[in-house]
Length: 152
Length: 69
Image (tube, rainbow over all chains, first blue to last red; front, side, top):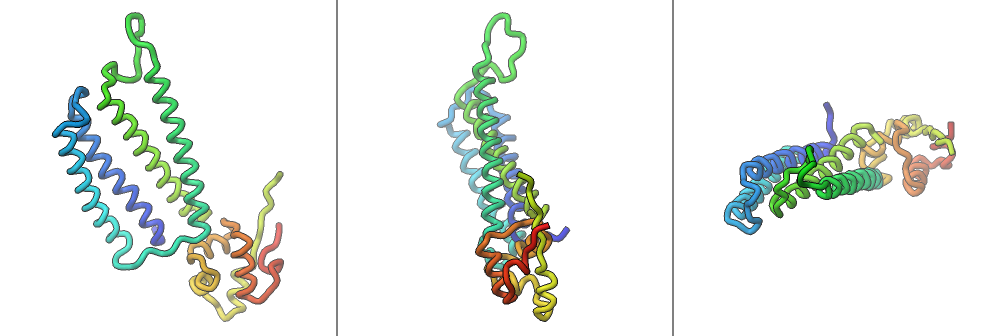
């Protein structure tokens, strides 16, 4: 497939997002729900994720652009960015509402099913929100690449 | 309101302008080659500013570049 420079950059951003968030969430899932947000294990994870983001970001940038400068944005790029942002914000809003409804679900005797785990510690809550933000970013970049590929 | 399709004659105008490339036209009107490609394929409707710049490049009235179906 023949990709323009702009499309290559978006694919690189999607790949970076998947690699970095994959690394982060695999590590988070291995931690107990009672982990403190201000702890050595979280600090180590955040630092290693930042280093991975910088290194993977540089590699993706060179793979997508080589030594060329980035093309300046034009009106179509801005239209596509606006559409993608609008869809990403709608996704974010929708997922946050769903999350809020699931948190408000009653617990205790007589409740046979609960979508979220009962141990909703700050660590778990924060990571649900980080997950939602990651999904919204993926939706934004996927929308952009779809619109560019369609030629709209 | 029904969306009306806009056709254009950019490919023909480029041909009559000595086979001007999409990249050359893009440079003259200040957009990327991909945008010219999308406009030419009628997949993207440009702003009035860009539409007028295209007409100026080929030295023709706007109505000769873009027509309604």
